[in-house]
Image (cartoon, rainbow, N blue to C red; front, side):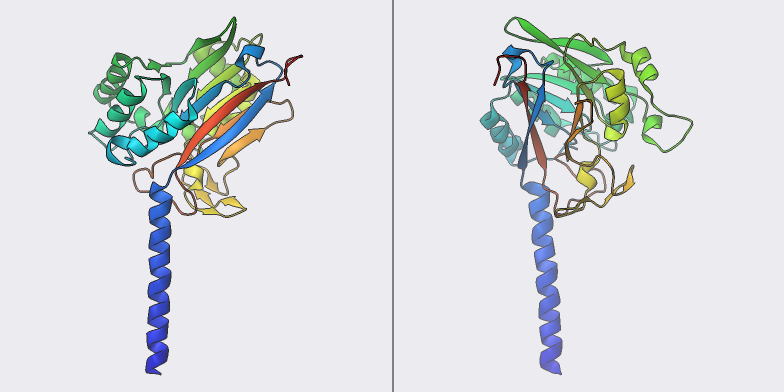
Length: 291
């Protein structure tokens, strides 16, 4: 009987130990996710254009001064970097981890930023502190506006969209539609290929109806806990088995969204079978003459 009890205790300790090891791996070991997005609207000169997406950092530090994350970004040699929100958490007052990462990457890459729901929850003084630092380091803060990305003789559009946190809730009073997006950001320039940065992937079909050919989002953290080969179990905003939890989704019209699983854990979150996610998107032109 005594040997049986010892065996059970040893087995339970092993299970707990393996669980803790898994939690450590899933909090600290970055996975690089590569996605190829094709469209005949992508100009020939943008074939192979590479975008690195950093999302939901929540002030997570990967190595000293985030050197492990920076090394992975440098290895990809992106044309641009986009920051799709929640770089900090709403309850933080020290943004040094995020600022250090930005100051290092901005020396080598053009960076574009949109706020997530956590930045939106900050008071105006803290928001201004972040925006001022980003702009001083050459980062474009896209405040419901559009910029042109130029490569060779061609251009595509990059839109940055943010909206009130009330649209993150399940309240039927606040429903995002294409008309509202047009009011905030203007009508989509359908003559060009349009990339939209928007933190919340819930409204993918709305973004597509507005005119986004490719949307880059985060927010869901990959569902925090993932079941291998099944996907996310639960997201605080989206409930059980969220529809857009991670990866590349394409609708019948060919319009797509890439949802990052994010890098950090959030205020009270954790990650299980859900490693921190650095996203790399490569644009592929299907214009005539391009293989």
